[in-house]
Image (tube, rainbow, N blue to C red; front, side):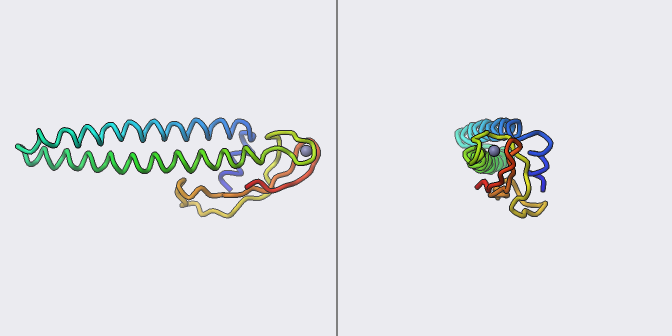
Length: 136
Ligand SMILES: [Zn+2]
């Protein structure tokens, strides 16, 4: 219940804001890692004279490539989930946006990586009128 606990602790509006900030931090990380990857690839021609430096440069470029992939993937998953929940955050009865209590969520293991995007749905109850509905 980590995500539900976060929404309970912060409230949906602040949780949504933090998801946007976190996902964009991953985007910046992926972009910086991409620059490192491209710089590493560009420098390989100069590093061929020194095999240890060439191997280190190759390892660094590979690590930057992995970081680019993970950062890009997390950016997409976190942003997509935040947008999905934000689109469904209006109460069907009173149209209040983002003011609800989380009743249930899709089960997720503690070791699920952020890339899994779990939970994909929430069952929530409006704080204004008491109507419950499913988001996602
Ligand atoms: Zn309502």
